[in-house]
Length: 264
Image (cartoon, rainbow, N blue to C red; front, side, top):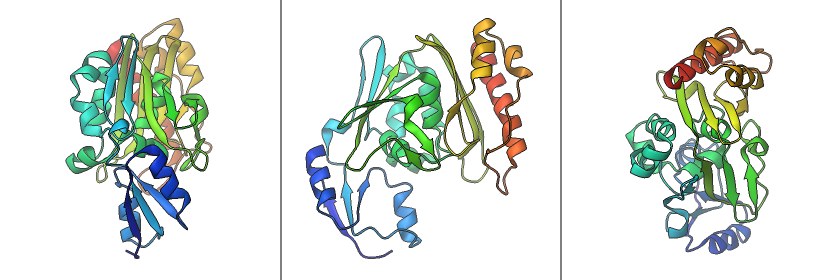
Protein backbone atom coordinates (compact mmCIF):
# COMPACT_ATOMS: atom_id res chain seq x y z
CA UNK A 1 0.00 0.00 0.00
CA UNK A 2 1.30 3.43 -0.91
CA UNK A 3 1.46 6.20 1.66
CA UNK A 4 -1.60 8.43 2.06
CA UNK A 5 -3.09 10.99 4.44
CA UNK A 6 -6.07 9.93 6.56
CA UNK A 7 -8.86 12.36 7.48
CA UNK A 8 -11.93 11.75 9.63
CA UNK A 9 -14.80 13.94 8.47
CA UNK A 10 -17.23 15.45 11.00
CA UNK A 11 -19.98 16.30 8.49
CA UNK A 12 -20.84 15.99 4.82
CA UNK A 13 -19.65 19.56 4.22
CA UNK A 14 -16.42 18.80 6.07
CA UNK A 15 -15.89 15.68 3.96
CA UNK A 16 -16.41 17.57 0.72
CA UNK A 17 -14.10 20.37 1.88
CA UNK A 18 -11.36 17.88 2.69
CA UNK A 19 -11.94 16.08 -0.60
CA UNK A 20 -11.72 19.33 -2.54
CA UNK A 21 -8.46 20.21 -0.82
CA UNK A 22 -6.77 16.91 -1.62
CA UNK A 23 -4.58 16.32 -4.65
CA UNK A 24 -6.21 12.95 -5.41
CA UNK A 25 -8.59 12.23 -2.55
CA UNK A 26 -11.03 9.36 -2.16
CA UNK A 27 -14.06 8.97 0.07
CA UNK A 28 -13.85 6.03 2.49
CA UNK A 29 -17.18 4.42 3.43
CA UNK A 30 -16.91 0.74 4.40
CA UNK A 31 -13.68 0.32 2.47
CA UNK A 32 -14.55 -3.22 1.35
CA UNK A 33 -13.41 -2.53 -2.21
CA UNK A 34 -11.17 0.51 -1.90
CA UNK A 35 -8.81 -0.83 0.80
CA UNK A 36 -8.08 -4.19 -0.92
CA UNK A 37 -7.45 -2.26 -4.12
CA UNK A 38 -4.98 -0.01 -2.32
CA UNK A 39 -3.28 -2.99 -0.66
CA UNK A 40 -2.67 -4.44 -4.11
CA UNK A 41 -1.27 -1.05 -5.20
CA UNK A 42 -3.92 -0.78 -7.90
CA UNK A 43 -4.99 2.56 -6.41
CA UNK A 44 -2.89 5.23 -4.77
CA UNK A 45 -5.06 8.09 -3.49
CA UNK A 46 -3.21 10.96 -1.84
CA UNK A 47 -5.88 11.26 0.87
CA UNK A 48 -8.67 9.16 2.37
CA UNK A 49 -11.67 11.00 3.83
CA UNK A 50 -13.45 8.68 6.27
CA UNK A 51 -17.23 9.13 6.65
CA UNK A 52 -17.55 6.79 9.65
CA UNK A 53 -17.85 9.63 12.16
CA UNK A 54 -20.81 11.35 10.49
CA UNK A 55 -23.87 10.38 12.51
CA UNK A 56 -26.29 12.01 10.06
CA UNK A 57 -25.36 9.39 7.44
CA UNK A 58 -26.42 6.44 9.61
CA UNK A 59 -29.76 4.95 10.52
CA UNK A 60 -33.05 3.60 9.14
CA UNK A 61 -36.37 5.44 9.07
CA UNK A 62 -39.79 4.02 8.10
CA UNK A 63 -42.64 6.48 7.52
CA UNK A 64 -45.38 4.06 6.43
CA UNK A 65 -44.80 4.32 2.69
CA UNK A 66 -41.03 4.55 2.49
CA UNK A 67 -37.92 3.07 4.04
CA UNK A 68 -35.02 5.52 4.07
CA UNK A 69 -31.56 4.19 4.86
CA UNK A 70 -28.57 6.39 5.62
CA UNK A 71 -25.58 5.94 3.33
CA UNK A 72 -23.27 4.75 6.13
CA UNK A 73 -25.68 2.11 7.39
CA UNK A 74 -24.03 -1.29 7.20
CA UNK A 75 -25.36 -4.33 5.39
CA UNK A 76 -25.74 -6.08 8.75
CA UNK A 77 -27.82 -3.21 10.13
CA UNK A 78 -30.13 -3.39 7.11
CA UNK A 79 -30.38 -7.17 7.39
CA UNK A 80 -31.07 -7.21 11.14
CA UNK A 81 -33.40 -4.19 11.27
CA UNK A 82 -36.86 -5.18 12.55
CA UNK A 83 -38.31 -2.23 10.65
CA UNK A 84 -36.80 -3.37 7.34
CA UNK A 85 -37.78 -6.99 7.99
CA UNK A 86 -41.39 -5.89 8.46
CA UNK A 87 -41.60 -3.31 5.66
CA UNK A 88 -39.41 -4.90 2.96
CA UNK A 89 -38.34 -8.39 4.00
CA UNK A 90 -36.80 -8.98 0.57
CA UNK A 91 -34.36 -6.10 1.21
CA UNK A 92 -33.40 -7.59 4.57
CA UNK A 93 -32.89 -10.96 2.91
CA UNK A 94 -30.71 -9.42 0.21
CA UNK A 95 -28.50 -7.61 2.74
CA UNK A 96 -28.00 -10.89 4.62
CA UNK A 97 -26.64 -12.53 1.48
CA UNK A 98 -23.88 -9.97 0.90
CA UNK A 99 -20.33 -11.29 1.29
CA UNK A 100 -19.28 -12.73 4.63
CA UNK A 101 -19.88 -11.51 8.21
CA UNK A 102 -16.93 -9.09 8.08
CA UNK A 103 -18.17 -7.51 4.87
CA UNK A 104 -21.72 -7.26 6.23
CA UNK A 105 -20.52 -5.54 9.40
CA UNK A 106 -18.20 -3.06 7.64
CA UNK A 107 -19.68 -2.55 4.19
CA UNK A 108 -22.27 0.19 3.74
CA UNK A 109 -25.18 0.66 1.38
CA UNK A 110 -23.87 4.04 0.26
CA UNK A 111 -20.39 2.71 -0.43
CA UNK A 112 -21.78 -0.21 -2.41
CA UNK A 113 -23.95 2.01 -4.60
CA UNK A 114 -21.23 4.62 -5.14
CA UNK A 115 -18.82 1.88 -6.23
CA UNK A 116 -21.46 0.22 -8.46
CA UNK A 117 -19.66 -3.08 -8.75
CA UNK A 118 -21.43 -5.01 -11.53
CA UNK A 119 -21.86 -8.02 -9.22
CA UNK A 120 -22.97 -6.20 -6.07
CA UNK A 121 -26.38 -7.09 -4.62
CA UNK A 122 -27.84 -3.69 -3.72
CA UNK A 123 -28.14 -2.47 -7.34
CA UNK A 124 -30.79 -5.15 -7.96
CA UNK A 125 -32.77 -3.86 -4.97
CA UNK A 126 -32.45 -0.22 -6.00
CA UNK A 127 -33.55 -1.02 -9.55
CA UNK A 128 -36.17 -3.64 -8.69
CA UNK A 129 -37.82 -1.66 -5.92
CA UNK A 130 -37.64 1.69 -7.73
CA UNK A 131 -35.54 3.41 -5.09
CA UNK A 132 -34.29 6.98 -5.05
CA UNK A 133 -30.64 7.86 -4.43
CA UNK A 134 -30.38 10.98 -2.29
CA UNK A 135 -27.18 13.01 -2.50
CA UNK A 136 -25.94 16.27 -1.01
CA UNK A 137 -27.15 17.97 -4.22
CA UNK A 138 -30.24 16.17 -5.56
CA UNK A 139 -32.37 13.04 -5.78
CA UNK A 140 -31.66 10.48 -8.52
CA UNK A 141 -34.20 7.87 -9.61
CA UNK A 142 -32.89 4.31 -9.82
CA UNK A 143 -33.57 4.19 -13.56
CA UNK A 144 -31.21 7.15 -14.05
CA UNK A 145 -28.47 6.17 -11.61
CA UNK A 146 -26.53 3.25 -13.13
CA UNK A 147 -24.59 4.26 -16.25
CA UNK A 148 -22.10 1.44 -16.91
CA UNK A 149 -19.26 -0.60 -15.45
CA UNK A 150 -18.37 1.09 -12.12
CA UNK A 151 -20.05 4.20 -13.53
CA UNK A 152 -22.97 6.09 -11.97
CA UNK A 153 -24.73 9.41 -12.36
CA UNK A 154 -22.77 10.83 -9.42
CA UNK A 155 -20.82 13.94 -10.34
CA UNK A 156 -17.62 15.35 -8.85
CA UNK A 157 -18.34 16.68 -5.38
CA UNK A 158 -21.54 14.67 -5.08
CA UNK A 159 -21.98 12.34 -2.12
CA UNK A 160 -24.74 9.80 -1.40
CA UNK A 161 -26.43 10.67 1.88
CA UNK A 162 -29.34 8.16 1.87
CA UNK A 163 -31.39 5.74 -0.21
CA UNK A 164 -35.18 5.79 -0.15
CA UNK A 165 -37.17 2.63 -0.97
CA UNK A 166 -40.94 2.74 -1.56
CA UNK A 167 -42.53 -0.10 0.39
CA UNK A 168 -43.71 -2.72 -2.13
CA UNK A 169 -46.83 -4.84 -1.91
CA UNK A 170 -44.59 -7.87 -2.34
CA UNK A 171 -41.01 -8.55 -3.39
CA UNK A 172 -38.38 -11.26 -3.47
CA UNK A 173 -34.67 -11.49 -4.31
CA UNK A 174 -32.98 -14.58 -5.70
CA UNK A 175 -29.25 -14.81 -6.19
CA UNK A 176 -26.88 -17.27 -7.84
CA UNK A 177 -23.62 -16.56 -5.97
CA UNK A 178 -20.10 -17.04 -7.25
CA UNK A 179 -18.96 -19.88 -4.93
CA UNK A 180 -15.74 -18.27 -3.68
CA UNK A 181 -16.54 -14.56 -3.42
CA UNK A 182 -20.31 -14.79 -2.79
CA UNK A 183 -20.72 -11.98 -5.31
CA UNK A 184 -23.79 -12.31 -7.50
CA UNK A 185 -23.15 -14.16 -10.72
CA UNK A 186 -26.74 -13.07 -11.26
CA UNK A 187 -29.22 -11.63 -8.78
CA UNK A 188 -32.83 -10.71 -9.55
CA UNK A 189 -35.27 -8.63 -7.50
CA UNK A 190 -38.92 -9.00 -8.51
CA UNK A 191 -41.31 -6.55 -6.87
CA UNK A 192 -44.83 -5.25 -7.07
CA UNK A 193 -44.25 -1.60 -6.23
CA UNK A 194 -46.63 1.38 -5.99
CA UNK A 195 -45.69 2.20 -9.60
CA UNK A 196 -46.12 -1.34 -10.93
CA UNK A 197 -44.18 -4.56 -11.39
CA UNK A 198 -40.40 -4.15 -11.60
CA UNK A 199 -37.63 -6.66 -12.31
CA UNK A 200 -34.11 -5.52 -11.36
CA UNK A 201 -31.04 -7.54 -12.36
CA UNK A 202 -27.46 -7.41 -11.08
CA UNK A 203 -24.39 -9.44 -11.99
CA UNK A 204 -25.40 -10.19 -15.55
CA UNK A 205 -24.40 -6.96 -17.24
CA UNK A 206 -21.94 -4.08 -16.76
CA UNK A 207 -24.45 -2.52 -14.37
CA UNK A 208 -27.93 -3.16 -13.01
CA UNK A 209 -30.82 -3.15 -15.46
CA UNK A 210 -34.55 -3.90 -15.74
CA UNK A 211 -36.26 -6.51 -17.91
CA UNK A 212 -39.39 -4.90 -19.43
CA UNK A 213 -40.55 -8.14 -21.07
CA UNK A 214 -40.71 -9.88 -17.70
CA UNK A 215 -42.39 -6.88 -16.06
CA UNK A 216 -45.09 -6.90 -18.76
CA UNK A 217 -45.63 -10.64 -18.42
CA UNK A 218 -45.87 -10.49 -14.62
CA UNK A 219 -48.28 -7.56 -14.84
CA UNK A 220 -50.57 -9.63 -17.05
CA UNK A 221 -50.30 -12.66 -14.77
CA UNK A 222 -48.15 -12.75 -11.65
CA UNK A 223 -46.82 -16.27 -11.88
CA UNK A 224 -43.42 -17.91 -12.19
CA UNK A 225 -44.65 -19.49 -15.40
CA UNK A 226 -45.09 -16.01 -16.89
CA UNK A 227 -41.31 -15.45 -17.00
CA UNK A 228 -40.20 -19.05 -17.50
CA UNK A 229 -40.19 -18.74 -21.28
CA UNK A 230 -38.64 -15.28 -21.50
CA UNK A 231 -34.94 -15.17 -22.37
CA UNK A 232 -32.85 -12.05 -22.60
CA UNK A 233 -30.16 -11.46 -25.26
CA UNK A 234 -26.65 -12.33 -24.16
CA UNK A 235 -25.10 -9.54 -26.22
CA UNK A 236 -23.19 -7.20 -23.95
CA UNK A 237 -23.56 -9.33 -20.83
CA UNK A 238 -20.62 -10.14 -18.57
CA UNK A 239 -18.42 -13.13 -19.37
CA UNK A 240 -15.51 -14.51 -17.37
CA UNK A 241 -14.01 -17.80 -16.19
CA UNK A 242 -17.00 -18.27 -13.86
CA UNK A 243 -19.66 -18.05 -16.54
CA UNK A 244 -20.28 -17.08 -20.14
CA UNK A 245 -22.68 -14.38 -21.29
CA UNK A 246 -25.10 -17.08 -22.47
CA UNK A 247 -24.95 -18.74 -19.04
CA UNK A 248 -25.67 -15.46 -17.28
CA UNK A 249 -28.57 -14.74 -19.64
CA UNK A 250 -30.03 -18.15 -18.74
CA UNK A 251 -29.54 -17.43 -15.03
CA UNK A 252 -31.56 -14.22 -15.29
CA UNK A 253 -34.61 -16.25 -16.34
CA UNK A 254 -33.98 -18.90 -13.68
CA UNK A 255 -33.54 -16.37 -10.86
CA UNK A 256 -36.55 -14.31 -12.01
CA UNK A 257 -38.68 -17.45 -12.07
CA UNK A 258 -37.55 -18.40 -8.55
CA UNK A 259 -38.19 -14.89 -7.23
CA UNK A 260 -41.67 -14.78 -8.74
CA UNK A 261 -42.44 -18.25 -7.37
CA UNK A 262 -41.43 -17.07 -3.88
CA UNK A 263 -44.12 -14.40 -3.74
CA UNK A 264 -46.75 -15.46 -6.29
